[in-house]
Image (cartoon, rainbow over all chains, first blue to last red; front, side, top):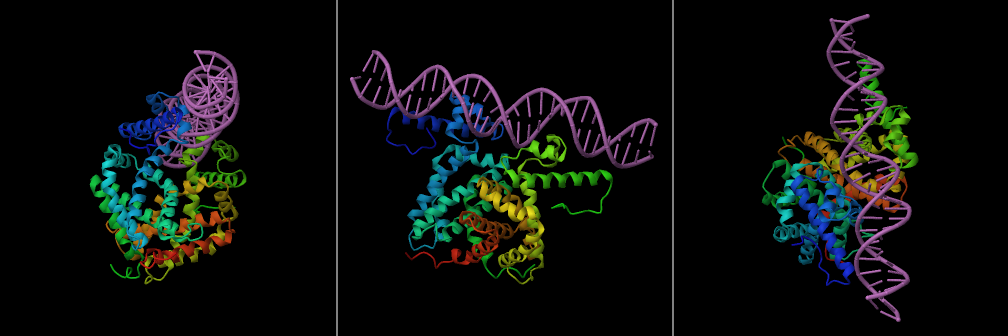
Length: 212
Length: 212
DNA sequence: GCGCTTTTTGTCTGTGACTGACATTACATT
DNA sequence: AATGTAATGTCAGTCACAGACAAAAAGCGC
């Protein structure tokens, strides 16, 4: 039932309950976001629904927004896995592009909440698009690490993995943004994003300036 | 004295006072951010220092963060101007790169608060980097409009201006991020950002994957 | 099972961003 | 000066979040 969780083989009762509560909070929050919208859902509501105090909620999630972060992290995980499975001789950004394409099937099956949910959430309140941007920083760092690992360089000294991750997210976010603006169907999302990625060479290139 | 303001030839007394108060709030806020940090500065403090109620502060700035947005908008204006002055036959991203280079001199002279300030602000609390990301959405849209105008396409139908703006900010932000991490001098900022922009073709290219 | 330590949770309290409602003041117009 | 309109102040309220401390619930040796 639980939408997320790495399902460790469990340690003591303590850790089990902790993980359980964590997942309960996450799932409940996402469900409430879906039902009433992000803003309209208070942290007290979430806590109450799960049966804990608001204070406890904040002990599991430093901020309300972190709920969204974790949800995205779940999605990113699929992307990372997909990236690792791409042939090593593919240049990084092409591999990312293809990984994005590969992962979509898995995401679709992953979370019902995400499927119809993220779509509606984004359309309901565009502020989430802005809120979402804030996390790109975190997500980029992780993606950069995976890219660096893949290429075999040190992300601390080589700026290219960071830049590649940034460009990738820039393109994908532009795609998401366009998709929201177009009010398109959920299944169109990947296509729109891939289009942006495929457009990168042209946008970067020199043959784009003199025309009407 | 005033750091910002388009200095209209003034209409009635009303509008003059309004603009005056707006600038006073902006300047005071930035000064306080610089002195005590962003978090430590309360909206009440800002309002009190200017001599108005907190409620009035929020009537001028929908959120505390909007102070930062407006400050950035001021900077962006220089970038837009610089971009418009670049030769028309330069491809968009190269023109952006050069515009960034061009604008720096003007920015340096523009605001004392920005000069030593933004640097310290970013280093003091890295959360601002994340906060800052949120605004890229807004800034990107505006930049995309300028790019579209320059190239002579409709930004509503052609996705390339949006993508170009997104990629540009992605690179610049990666540069800023690296600069903050390196704890470098303020004057190094433009160089670091330009480096990222110059690195774009390589990162996009195919000749980057097989090496140790 | 029974104390004892450690972790986790609840409760209380407080701060600070932000908002709606409404009275009040200040400019504008005639 | 009279009156309408826009700006401001005041007040009360919501909500995200944080510190402090006590209560409850593991874990652990006996």
